Each structure stands twice: as structure tokens, then as C-alpha cells.
Length: 302
Image: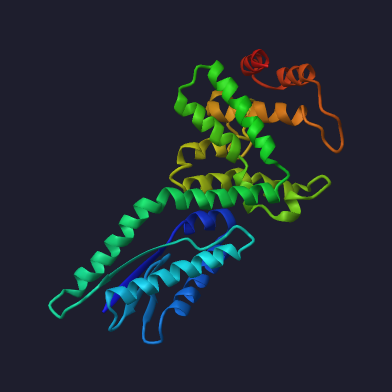
């Protein structure tokens, strides 16, 4: 008898980014793939929030491995046919009980250990793949562009270097510049793409993207270090920002840097309703509305 254990990767991240209905759909789709790849006599069970177990009676090691490979191929085919960037990423492990003297609990533990080892090898790539998908969705759904994020990364690093920040903080700044609006994947399309002014209720919904982004970042080990900066990137020096109403140096430095460069980039790019500000005018406008020390550093960098 053989046992296969499967653990779906990134369900919490997907729930935070796209909502629980999408996470539930992935679990259902996974169950359907397992049923398709297994035989009528096999027993398939959901044994945890994102875990499945399969008992394969009278099945040797080679047959179990063939079924495991069938599941992996089906998941890959499902991914290739998915157009909304949400797809199944599952880690599988298995073990075979070959004689009556073997303890079934030990067989089960070996299968589970196989999953853990495989997860350690796949964790970085699977999380990276899921985050890339979330990021692609963000650019598709919001009015922000990848070019805008890249410019913010350049400007942020320039200020960070001028402030003599260590390399780790510079890397965090660049990551923050690329993903600060990741929470917009959780905002209704009608609000994100509305051409006119938002109503008060719509604006309240829009402002939730900072908190949604925080939850997404906290769901990913590779983004935990910038989660607080994402949460605070719309706070204001005078305390009139959101979501916490922080003021002055209560706001993390990296969030303050991003806020300055984000405003600068918005002013110096053409918009449908206006032409870009000259750099000098944009810097003067920032000086009137933001912390002067960062503005002077930015002007010296330019």
C-alpha cells in the first residue's frame, strides 16, 4: 500500500491577495485533479486546510510515483490554461508500505517528511511565482505601471544612498517601491478604474489597500520585512494620512521616502488631464508640503 501527501502552497497568500473565494476555488480544483489522476479504489481525503492525503491500496512504489507525476502534470496543465494569475502550486510526497511488519504510522511519517523536504527546496521558487502573479494582477488592475514602480525604485535608492542606509535597507526600499500598492488587488475593479472622482464610500474602500497590502506581505516570508512600510506608505507628516493617522517620525523612514518619491514621480509624468510639471516646479511643490530634509536630498540627487 502507498500513501501520497499533498500540500497546496501559498493558500493564505492567495486568500489575502484575491479573497477566500479564490482560495476555496483552488482547493476545489486541486481535489478534482486528484480525483482525475487517481483510480476508483483509491481513497482521497482533505486532511487539513490546504492538505490532502491519498491512500493507494495494493500499489507499489513505481505505480505511486506514476500517479504523483500525473498529478504534477495535471497541475501544470491547469496553470497553463489559467488566465487570471491564480493557479495550483502543490508539493507532493509519498511512501510505500511493502510488507506486513512495517508500521503504517512510520510510512505516513515518511510521506510527510518527504513533503517537508520538497517544500524546503521549492519554497523560494513557489512563493516567488505566486508573488509574481499577484504583482502582474496589480499592474493589470490598477492604473500603476511597471515603469512607474521602476522609477520609484531608482529614486528611492538614490535617497537611501544619500542617507547612507545599509544595503539591506536599500534592498527593502527597492522592494517596497515595486510592491507598495500590492493591496490594490483586493480593491473592486469599478473603484480602481473609475475615471471620475470617487465618492466618500468608494474612497474609504480604496484606502483599505494599505491594510490589504500589509496582510499580503505578512503572508509571505520574503515580504514580511516590508509589511509595515506598505501599511504606512500613505501616512502623512502632519498626521492626516491613513490608515493609522501617524505623524512625523512615528512614520517609518522607508515609508516617508516612498511617499516623497511617489508624489514627485506623479507630478513629473504626463497625465490625461495635465502636462508633467518641470522638475524644479515639482521640487518646489514638495517643499511646500513635505519634510524639507528629504526634498533637499532628492534635489541634490537630481
